[in-house]
Image (cartoon, rainbow over the protein chains, first blue to last red):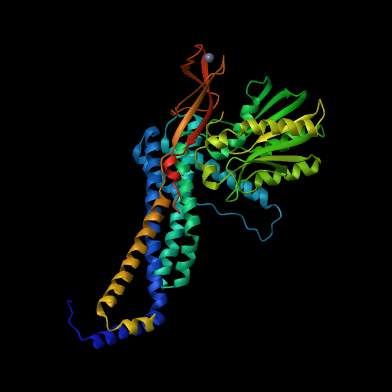
Length: 372
Length: 104
Ligand SMILES: [Zn+2]
């Protein structure tokens, strides 16, 4: 024995330690827990920071390959990463969709021009430019996520408030899945390969492949193409964002214009899109339904719903399920391979719901990166 | 617990053992939870494959993704079976099988 204490005094010491521990835990328990939580959150913030820096470096490195002047790139890159959008006031919501669209259009133009300016390279093609700007956007999103998480972490540390720390801790798994997804998006756009969300354009691109295209309206509306073709003895208008650069286009505007042009002669509209799956649902499972299958801030969705209601055209949707991370990282094999099944379903819906000689709109919704 | 402690109080060795065991548990708990978490946070660079299909005979071939590849693009490769032109049928990422190890 190292400590040669008499047996009963040892018992007393241990008993005192237990009683002391009991009181310490009663009075300082929460503070100890706060410190533990902050420690864990500190690790998380560190990890987020590494991810953010990784994304920045990847994006900056890619931009540098195309840029003519590095000082210019550095300057504008920093400014663009810190840029913001103020959404319109919703207190009086009438007309908010137009306001929203106007602001988002302005932002997109400004953003694309900024990317052009930072590269200062007249030889770059439109597709690479759009993919690069998508890459910058994903980097921005990750940067923002980090800033918000850091804000709450520092707030909890400053105020010593256990509940702010716990709130952040509760969100941690979600924050991480978002951060991971954005980082994967940066990698995907770096390569210019299709992402999970590209499955909509991919399906319609496969649908028109090998068929005789009667007319190809390039830039039917901004960033969106329309293909006219005959299939199953029906006339089909295929709507898709212009590829293969990273771009979602304006499918809502295109559908609106098509319906207004072909007054009352279009029988149905079919939309194909990627949709978020529930945990436990299989990635790449396909489901059919009705309604406007389109994400984003809602401008395009609003337009489609309004115009199909005006002309009383039934709206069908086929969705391919995936998680958020899968939607913005490079398309997985099981998602890409669903196209055959989806095309079969499209043909079945067309045969079930229309007659020969009818006109149909088929829209592939999503980011068309890597899909022409 | 305390009662048990009191009964064993005369035996100092058991006390030391208990304390040592508790410390050991605390260490094991903190380290395992941390390493599991950091594993979950890791992001791996994806493996991207390009599936080519022969325009003439439909022969399929898979190779690594190259920058500039996009779907339906005609590539320089020729078909290994008939020598015809090939185009890109699909592009997708593969997951490493190792990652799917289950911890139960
Ligand atoms: Zn061949």
